[in-house]
Length: 384
Image (cartoon, rainbow, N blue to C red; front, side, top):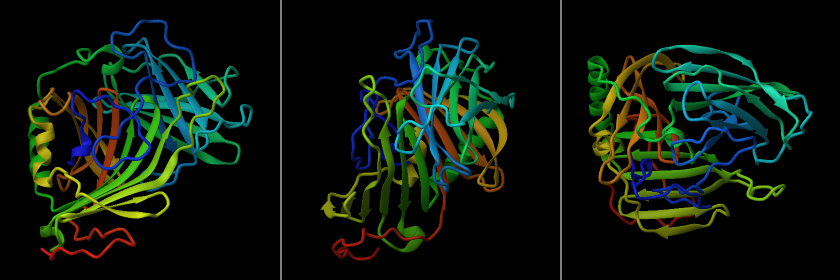
């Protein structure tokens, strides 16, 4: 796992317009479209708003039709409120009476308990289609919450959000339960991490939010000489970066950026490309070698088995766990999707301090080659 995957514990999570490789900084504080929960939270924020593209297929392979903004308030199961607001892909309001509707459903990734999709209540006190629901009955643990959007000009689209309750940012970092490790889940996790350290190459899609109505998506890749005979290489393509929190009443948020930045490192050379296609030489990116990926998860606790689930048609077993604070990173909670046949980690979800993230892995051990950006100067270093 590269250095971009985790924040130093002293680093706040804030947004910048252009991101190179490590920390994507997102403006602190939660954005929202609806009323706050009356209860005073024990955590350091009082609401969380996550933004995700609503798509007709997997978000890593399907373009978003609109953005679903899910706001959560309250500190623990049984005292949660949910609000969903809809905008276009640029964060602009949609017609308030345009025929949109939202259903909310959920499944617990540990127990398999589920909440059937049900209609949310539309509210007129908004400038874009907005829907509310009282606590749907989510218990402790990891949940996938799905918003299903019906729209006047096409088939329904949906967005998935991965939550853990109690949420540490709302309820405090000592609020989530800490069960003893499940021996079978612990063995599966250790085997998967060992196998991960032996990958020779990998690509992954990333969704990232600071919990403040921000949305960042990227594609990343790492290769080694063992995969393709080329120098060690890294690539980071920023697909989307936007913050939709409204600072002033009625003032629109800045327009999001799309396909606005990429960075490539091949051996001891590096390049960047901006939104205008300008390519510049840069220092090579310092990224964590694949062989050291398991270090991120050292000292895992509360390791628990979860349900079976599919990732792009592949059956996976979910394992959830907690990683305590380490010298170079803050504590975090994870859910891993481990391929039932190959043992590879296919997907992960993570929650940390103002940091909500999903990765979907692909092309493990494939012999693909990372190329310099078009227009870059020729590689001067010899081929490995």
